[in-house]
Amino acid sequence: MIIDLKKIQFCMEGAELATQRLDYYQSYGVLFEQPPQKLQQIHDFKENLNTLNKEYLDLFIRPSNKYVFPCCSAYKSFEDQKDTKGPSIKNNEDQKANDHLIFEIKHMCSLIKKEKRQWQRKNYLIAVNFLYQEQNYLLDQLDWLPVLCAQIQKNSASRFYNEVALNLKNFFYFEKLLLEQILLKKINPLN
Image 1 (cartoon, rainbow, N blue to C red):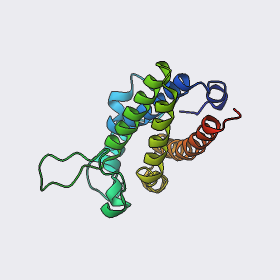
Image 2 (image 1 turned 90 degrees about the horizontal axis):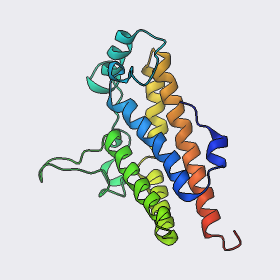
Image 3 (image 1 turned 90 degrees about the vertical axis):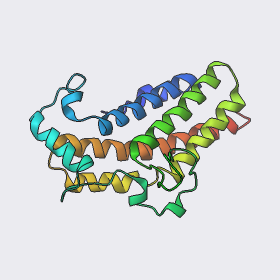
């Protein structure tokens, strides 16, 4: 997956930009949620599918010497997590909140969908409020993604997962800058 900067730059209107950003988050969610055998319909793998399936299990599902913890709590203490109401899902009082990357990506997708809806309804102040929420969530809850990506690159033998990690890390930094620029543009009265 390559971030098409020209497409993003020319699509700076609220709802269209939200749609583009949502597509990227949903794509990353699918990559971490489904093994390559299920992804072969949407991606032409250059590598052996059985090898990629085994690596997916080793990296993200079963503990092994290659296992990478795709959970916020592996990289940050629970007290460091400022927004616990987002992806934190508990089945009962005693269970620790689920902080898996999939839940966090889904939460960000839900924020972006709400933002997009407000742009479409021409509720600009509410849309900008959602942008602030997304920025805070990215900086407070998803700030561990570069460390996760480094772990994936260190433990992955396949080109596919190395590129997924590199793209996710680059997307994180790009998203951080993009949200900053959008918010500066939207709150500047001269624009």
